[in-house]
Length: 471
Image (cartoon, rainbow, N blue to C red; front, side, top):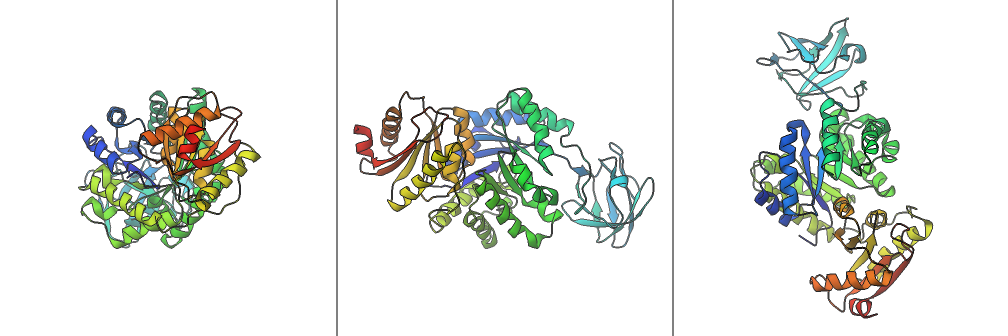
């Protein structure tokens, strides 16, 4: 699937993470492996990490934290409710729910949840409305029938509770990410910049280069997206909880707004949740799911994500192959370049050359854009224009290769640092020719720098592969 420009993130469970399985996913178009730590122990996560690295050093690793969430506590048999039933709720971490009392994992729910609030349990399957409260309980009325089970999600739309940004389990997993040099931490339920900075403090204390992906899945995260983007490497639009916290009719508009914000700031963006949900049990997608993938790509996302489809579904490889195939077909009919304003990342000259190189590649029908990078900033700038030409990024840092696994249209490989720009151009073009990725008469647009690997781009050169190699 080397022609695919949209990146694919796949969730891998420790229950299905054999090397052969991951290799099949990689050959089908996998770019990033996500590990959902809410359902894992550290030794489970380590097994996935080891197996992924055995397959390829180009697959990026993403650890997904549990984040600041509220859940129902364990219960013996569950509480069956009918419409109109009275249900009592209290904050009592570690205490089992009993009779008609639902105990929650956060202790201050009575103090912080006002009368009139809607409380949604298990992804909204059961709705409770707070009618009154006293010193010990929220007195709620059930809006629909169902069974309230233990360890289920609790959402309170429109209400901000003062949960700490990181649980103790999250802190252990952040440390694991640091120790194992994992590429990304996807932090759940990010509400504001403080939630991002809490993790960044831990990373900075140990000089870690792990990048933070902010998962936007509540109204507060949407409202504070600009300050979140000031500090996060990228964003995941986690539509599952987002559609519970916010009216579902608003989700498409919010998705498009978040993608646009990330493009403007040159930040990778992932669209997630139920993209091929039916393929957990079915070998074929629905037409609506195919349209959902297409809509995300037409909206210019960097990446799309699979969750249960690859974590525990019956057709994981087929799901990934389906997503890749749809992406390739949709990319053939999308705009050839995203016309966005110049954004200065390194310096003004580099910003101008980045846009000029993408435009030149389109106007001259070049085979591809060839660029070198030490930090990835130039490549992120190129990816933001969503051009229809592949960006072949030759990176002088193996970690940057993996970080760019989230960026649209980028194929990154490691290259030993060169002494001069001429060495880079000749060496990179020759390696692509040797690997059979280009032919001698193909035109390449080269963007590189003459003033050191961290100074940004300083020139654009355009020519056939043959001339670039022989100059």
